[in-house]
Image (tube, rainbow, N blue to C red; front, side, top):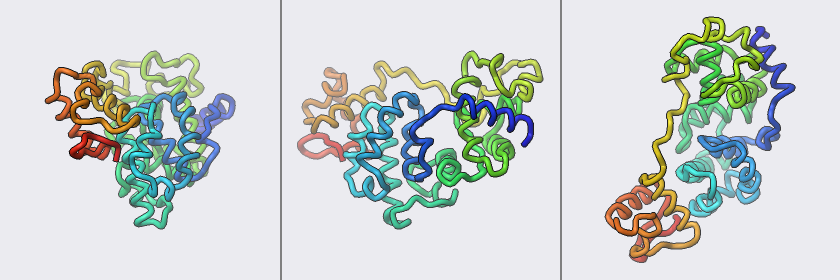
Length: 287
């Protein structure tokens, strides 16, 4: 291995986190964990991951359930559209892949709601392929340590792919994630504690501004304010629907806008189009 590969893997052997999804190579379990972890704190996912898989242990069990059941089980994880994506992906796999997740990048990308990062994550963490990953944690490592500059998506993927030590794809992916989560953080990176500082391109250049992660591929952008937003109203309605149907007359109050029925109806319509709710003469309910 190159020194950066050796030092990072050696550090991870000592400092790597023990997370429940790391104990499985089941593609379905990996997909569930990856969708749960998108913009959701690890601690929250840890609490819900095992419970979700008890209820939906296989692709087929998820596909056989109404989408509303999956949305219901997603409570507390945020970004409810991910539950719809997961259910649609499971249904696609039953219809086109005999109830199994495919194991090629092209076929994984054809699944509803599955993007380039998630497809590659399934290949790495379920099938131990030597593929580089570029999400917000790994993207910081790629931009700062490997390149020392901002990277466009194709370039970042090529750099990430080229850094994976042969035969070590699974371990490398986990090590990069843990480095990004605990050391190479977005704000106040702990460079003095970094196990690969002596190999880091940004550190070797003297940490010039701007930070290479600014605008680089895979780095998530700040979320808009939740308070008073349409996003907040959407979340309130989905939470209400988990408890039961909501009548048309109760819609605005359930969404937190008791004096703005027009806004409530407009935003509720986006939930219907996203597959998170069904509207009929009586009101709204989970699909």
